[in-house]
Length: 325
Ligand SMILES: [Zn+2]
Image (cartoon, rainbow, N blue to C red; front, side):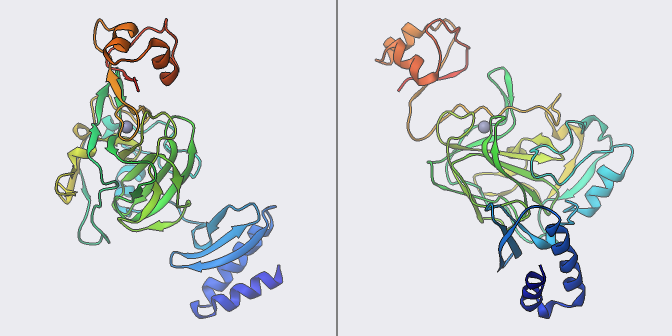
């Protein structure tokens, strides 16, 4: 314990007494947990503590309150008329407890997406084409924009910010990274094959945060990319021009009309349909039968059932993508 503190003192002797004292108390508080420290590393994001169980975190962020845009926080969280909830949680992908209601946004709230005080500009998170848009799909809401990629391709942070969540999500996202940005938005990067960042880590726009994949509820490798305003999903194509890979306007005027009618912080569908690499998919149309689909695609009913985890008697849903090869 004493040696550990001493070592930190040597590492950080130039950063002032205040930090040293803070650090000492943090070390004290760590020691009250059963987590054993394996090592500490000084990297560009700060001092990282590595535990014996191979988890790690950044020391200076222990007391971080999650607020990246103070003005916005005052307008939508502290303002009692809106009263949105937002916490800094590493284990829940939505932090409002599904309670933030867009209908409370009766006035227009101005948000600066880029420019002035913000450190960087939008970078497209994956190289491929858009294979599925935000909106109504297969009788459910699709809250993201799907971008084609191959498993193993780099997935990049759309803007700079701080990683809030980086773990496997069993709600359908698979390996998921959530970044809270300086502008106040959050972005979600789902179905990754590999996570390359940890909670509390600072990232810059364009920094690789994971590798693309097909984990979770996904048929074929792709990136499911979401943009959320205090948990409520926004159509990323309303604010980003993917052709020019820039924001449409540095200023975003947030009103309830920005959001899909009826959309809510809780509405979630991470199901991906379109694919890239690998399989061939067929979109079920009215009147289709498994036998007819198999015949047209020169395969068998049992092969289609095997590829899709369905039975020959399964009722086909119109609009659903079936893997046929
Ligand atoms: Zn998607």
